[in-house]
Structures are given as structure tokens and as C-alpha cells.
Image 1 (spheres, helix red, strand yellow):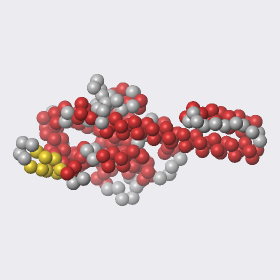
Image 2: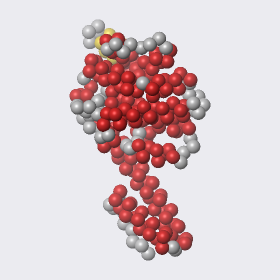
Image 3: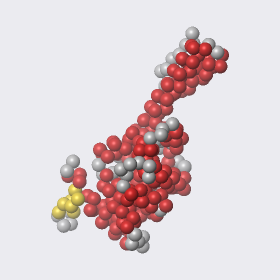
Image 4: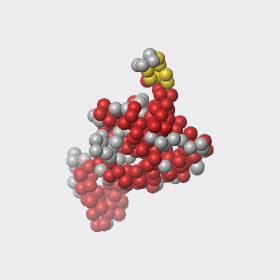
Amino acid sequence: MGDRNYYFDMKDKHKEPTFFFMLNCLLLTRIQNDLESDDSVFEQEVNVYLANLLTAFTNPSYIECLRPYLSEHDMELFTRLKSSNDARLKYTIYKANADFLLFSIGVFDSVGEHSVPLGPQFKHGHQGQMGKGQTYYHFAFSYSKRVPGVADTMTEVLEQLAKGFEKYVTILTYLRGEYFDIVKRLSGGEIYHLMRSVEASGKRLRLEKKQDEFLDAYIDWKSHHTERAKRKVMVLAEELRGLDPSFKYRPT
């Protein structure tokens, strides 16, 4: 794990922390493409945040930590959070999905000509994904203000990312082209399998939700014996079979 935290410079024959390598690449990219940081403190903090994010995505354990929070579709994410009053959970989920979108579009070109095949949720085109990323960061920013312990600096960084999402995607896109040959090397790698895992996880969550709905409807039917309750059971049974062909139900 320690080696993963360091980058070996082949030219100078020395190791340096991966974070500093990422930050240096990021700053050089901004300078070389006339996208230099302004003098605001928060813009500098965004650079640090992006460098940390780039470093984190080199670590498979970080990707594993993201899995429970990623959602395949907008509606799946919104449905998951609709009934929750937990501001910390909402903050964490929106932030994780926003980070993943920023990284996927900027570094892996998930909506471009040579995009990594990330899954059906990336079929909505460049503008759709840009808008989604901006919205997720905006929600993460909003909920961060309600969560005790979230530093003011993080709240400001999330606000900057929401406002300038397209700019930061552009910076990461330039960085990818100038410093990483990452799309070609990872197009069949971890990022693809992560999204396959997200898709499978989404299907599992939908199945579990549908099973709960079926059981509630079945109990209601057995309690009241109404035709309406019976029809609902039959409809949910068909929907369950669509998600799980092995499911069998015979009305009694």
C-alpha cells in the first residue's frame, strides 16, 4: 500500500508522494492551457481537492469504498434519498457521485469519441452529464452546510466545483491528454468493472425494494382480502419476475 502512495520519477530516479506528482501535473496543465488559478484561497483549495481525488483514484481500496454510494440512474439516486432525513448520507452520496462523474468525464472521457464504456447512464450526451455533475455538486454543497464537522473549506470547494464544473472537466481533459495515457490503458480495466459493479448493485437494490413492496402488499391482501389488494399483489409478482426470473408465486 505504501508504494501506491509514491510516484517514481524515471528521469530523476527518485520517489515522490503521488499527491505532489498529481498536484504538479494539475498546476502545469492549468498554466500551459491558460487556465491558471486565480488568487482566491478557495481556487487553491480546489486544486488540492482535485489532486487528492486524482491520487485517491489510483487506489483500488478507495474505489471499493465508493461502490455503496454510486447509483446507476438519476431516479435510482433520488428514490434512494427521498425518504431519508439524514443530511450526512445525502451529502456523502451526492459528493461521491459528483466526484465520480467529474473523474469519469474529465479523465476517462466517458462521453467522448474514445470513451470508456461505462454503462447506460452515460448515454445522455456530454451536456447531460455535465449538468448532472454540476447538480450533484450543488446538492453536496447544500447538504454540507447542514452536516456537523464538515469544514467550511470543503463547503466552499464544493460550491466552486458546482459553479465551475465545466471548467474543471476541461482542466482534467487537458491533463489526461498531456500527462496520462489513461484511457487506452484502462478502458478495459478497473473503471469499467466498477461501473459493471454499480449496475449490478443497482439491480440488487431494485430487487430488494420490489421484494419489500410485494411482502407489504401480500400482508395487506391477507389482512383485508380486497380485490384491489389482490390485483396489486399480482402486479408486483409480475414485476418481481421481471427482475428475478427464478421468482415464483401462485395465488392462494
